[in-house]
Length: 428
Ligand code: KE4
Image 1 (cartoon, rainbow, N blue to C red):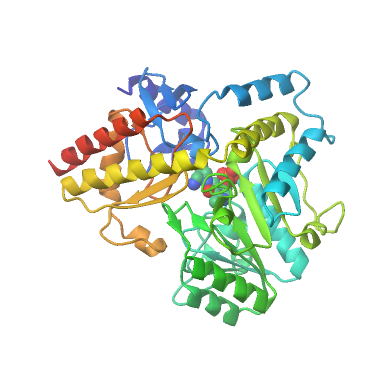
Image 2 (cartoon, rainbow, N blue to C red):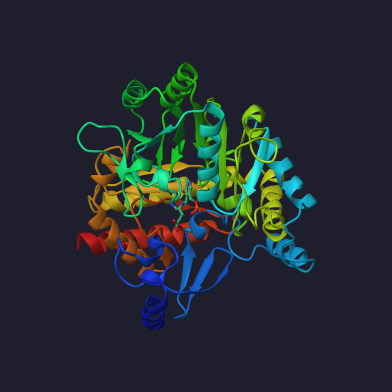
C-alpha cells in the first residue's frame, strides 16, 4: 500500500532531517510510513502510491474549503500573474486587514507575518515592550510555535519557572517563562505571586495542541481578572481556533476579550500567513509607528493576501457554513464513540465548530496531564487502521482534526464505518 512512499521517505531522509520539514509529519508517534502526497482534490488526498484518503487534517487547519478550491485557486493564479512579491505596500494587505479588524472587536489594528510562530513571537515582544515587563505565562500542553521563549517544560519540583524543552534554548531565556496548568486558575495565581514582572499570559482559548481541550468560561474570566489586576496583557493564540471554532474562533463563544490575538492557517487560505493584532494603544507601539521592532521580507505578500482574502470572504458571506461543519463534526465524533463503545474501548470526544478531537481514555480531559494519561498506543493502532481504510487523521493524540466544506455526509458515514471496523480489529 505504501511502497512508493517508503522509497520516497528513505530518499527524503537522506537530504532532510527526519525526511520532513515539520516533525509531526514523520509519523513518529503513530509509526509506519507517512504517505507522500501527490495531490489534493476537494476533501481527498491522493498519495504517490495511488491511495485515496478523506483528509481530516487539511494541512493542520488552513484548508477549511478543502483542496483546490476554485475561488482560492483563481485568486492565487490571477494575483501571481501580476507579480509574486514587491516588498512594498499593496492594497491587498489593507483589504485583508480590514476584513480581520471588522470581524474581531478585539482587533483594532493587525500586522501580517509568514507563520503562526512569527505572529506569537512578535506579539510577545510587543507585550513586553508595551508593559515594560519581562516574564510571560504559558500553559503546559499549549503550543504557540517554536520561538525560544515558548519551548519550555515544567521546571523542577513545584517551580513555575520553565526550563528549556529543547537543546539550543538558553536557560537565560526560559527563566522568563512561567508555566501554569490549563483550566486551573490557582496555578496562574501562583505565577503572579512568584513574579511581579509578568508582561502577558498567552493561551490557546480552545487548545488544539494537546488534543482538543477547550478552556472553561470561568477560567478565561479568571485570567482576564488576574491580568487586569496585575497590569499584564491577555493574549489569545487563535492561530488554529480562529475561523475554525467559529467565524471569530473562540471569541465567537467566550465573552472574554483579549488584549492581543494571534492568527494564522485559515487566513492564508493554504499559503504561508500569520497575523497578530489587538488594542490600538498596544499596536501603535509597533515599528515604524512605535519603538517595538518587527519586520519580514515576505510579510503581506500579495499572493498570500489574495488566498487569505478569498478564504475569509467566502466564510464571511456564508456564516451558515459553521452550522454544517459543526453538525458533521458532531456526527463523526458520535460515530467514533459508538464504535468504541461497541468494543468496550474507552473513548472521550470533543467538538468545537469544525474542530474535533478524541482521547482513548475513560475520563474527561481538562489539561495536559489528563491528555498525557490517555492511551496513545491504542491511538496509534486506530490511526493506522483508519489510514489503511482511506481515512487520513491527525498522526498524534495531541493534535486536532478538522471538517472541511468539501466533505459530504457520505464521507462522514464512510469514516464511521471504518471506525467500527478498526475498533473491532483493535479489540479482536
Ligand atoms: P506555525 O508556525 O506552524 O504556522 O504556527 C505555530 C502555531 C501557533 N499557535 C498555534 C495554536 C498552533 O496550533 C500553531 C501550529 N500548529 C501546528 C499543529 N498543531 C502546526 C503543525 C506543525 O507543527 O507541523
